Image (cartoon, rainbow, N blue to C red; front, side):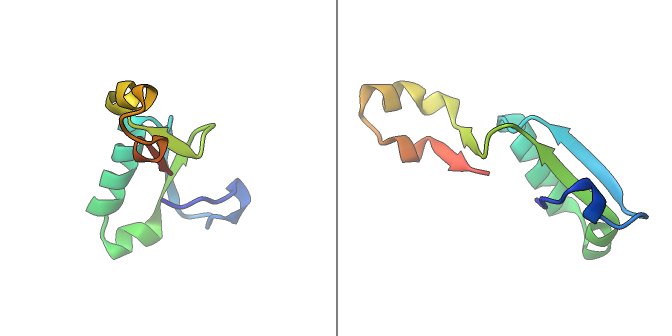
Length: 78
């Protein structure tokens, strides 16, 4: 995933914008990047917009709150 400001991308580059850095947004961005060929990556930019720089793996929240696992195991940086 590439992080650019609006003025830094090439004028002929297509942009796919994904709003939300939750589970679906992050995995959609990763899957799009995985499926693109090298020539696609030069012509298409995938942008993920979120207010956080991390993703919380929600199914692990009870274990994190209970103290059976550490917080770092349920929070992943984007």
